[in-house]
Image 1 (cartoon, rainbow, N blue to C red):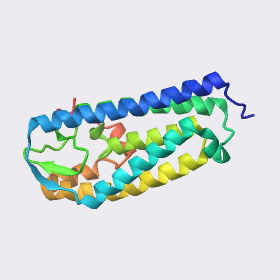
Image 2 (cartoon, one colour):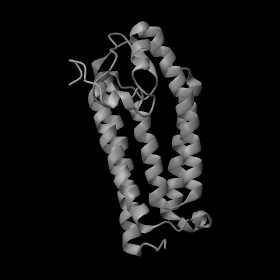
Image 3 (tube, one colour):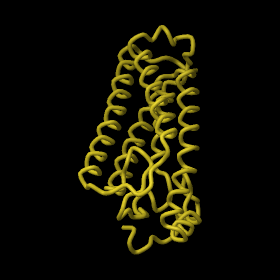
Image 4 (cartoon, rainbow, N blue to C red):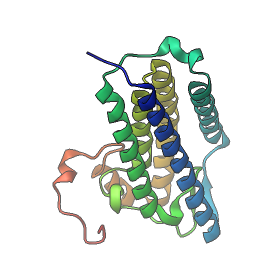
Length: 214
């Protein structure tokens, strides 16, 4: 049986979801500040339409999130009766996504940018999660969105958030890989062959790490 959360448990999940999203925002802002402080000149940058789509998605998610928190009755028609353990699994996934997000930023360093761009002295990151996956930051966002769906138990939030994220990610991944190929050429082609886009290829999980990836 699906069961239901007590009001106290529902409140805990809401507070936890707020805390995780706040932590994601703080981490992004901090690493963006560090990247700007490095003062590297932009060589290649994404077109404005990609950043506009991302901004639209963020604004939509913030709006629906606040509606869910402050006026839940407006979205109650899309509520689902999920197993209680699935709701708590959502919290575990949210924490895991946050951990992956931190790991990604630690290895990106000054290469991080909220917009797609290549800077002078840009390096190809192949350490940490980038050893197996080309876009682990997007992986973290996918896991976070799955977590949000489970924690809110709302199919409207789950479907619309994931659809918007999928659209933005598909556009940005193609453009990002084209920019990296333009910059790093054959080095990036080789890297593409031994990594997955969002999940690691199974063969790479059992391969010996390169000497510089520790």
